[in-house]
Amino acid sequence: MEVIITDSYEAMSAQAAKMIAQQILHKPSSVLGLATGSTPVGTYKELIRMHKEQGLDFSKVVTFNLDEYVGLPPSHNQSYRYFMDHNLFHHINVPTGHIHVPYGHAESVLDFCAWYESEIKRYGGIDIQILGIGGDGHIAFNEPGSSLGSRTRLKTLTQETITDNARFFANMDEVPRFAITMGVGTILEARKIIMLANGSKKAKIVAEAIEGPVSSQVSASALQLHRDVVVILDKEAASKLKRADYYKWVYDQKAKLMPALIGKAT
Ligand code: PGA
Image (cartoon, rainbow, N blue to C red; front, side):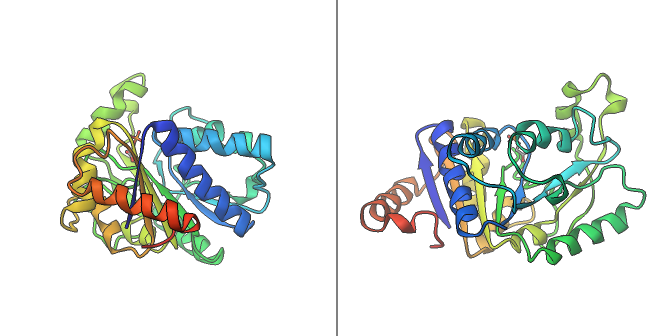
C-alpha cells in the first residue's frame, strides 16, 4: 500500500487526477471505476480542466460507477447518475454509450447485477478504481459486515446512512432504503485502486482501514489485500496514522530518486 499525505484537498485531488490522466495517456481505452460523494469532486474538476485546457481525451475511455440508489430514476437530482453527469460526464468527451452507472429502476435487480459484473469482464476489467471511504469504513455501499468476497448486489442501507441522507429529500418516505453496489470482491479485482479521504472526520476510520486488522466490519480494510493500492489523503485525514512519518519518508525518497515510481505498486 502506498500512502500519500498531501497538504490540502486541492493537492490530494490534483495528485489523483494526475494518476488517472497518466493511465488514460498510457491506455486511451482505459476502464475507469468511478465514485460519487463529496471527496472525488475536486479530482473530477481537475480532470475536466485537463480535458478543456490540455486536451485530455476521454473518447475511448469506458466508465463503471460503484453504486446507485434503488428507486430513483437517473434524472432525479439525488441519483448518482445525475451526480456523475453534472460533476464529470457532461464536461468531458466520454461517449454516453461508454458510461455505466447501476440502474436504480431495473425490473430485476438480480439480473441487472449479474449483467453489470459481466459487462465489467467484457471490457477486460477495471484498470483504475477511484474510491472514497464512508465514516463507517464503507467503500461503495458495502456497509459494515459486507462479505469481503461480495459481488455487485442489492444492499439494504443502514439506518445511519438513511438518516444521513434524509436532508437531501423532501420527506423521509422518499429516502431510498436500498442501493445496487459493486461488492468488495468486485472492487478488489480492479488492477489499481486509488482511495481518497480528506478532513479530520475521516481520520479515525482511515487509520483503522490502513493500519488496523482486515475485517468485514471496516470494508475499506480489505484494500490491504490488494497488490496495487494508493491512498491519497490530506493532512487532516492522515492525522491519526501511526506510521505517517514513514509514509512521508517513502514518498520523499521516491520523489527524489525515482519520480516515475510515485503511484506505482509498493
Ligand atoms: P463522501 O462519502 O465522499 O461524501 O465523504 C464517501 C463515502 O460515503 O463513500
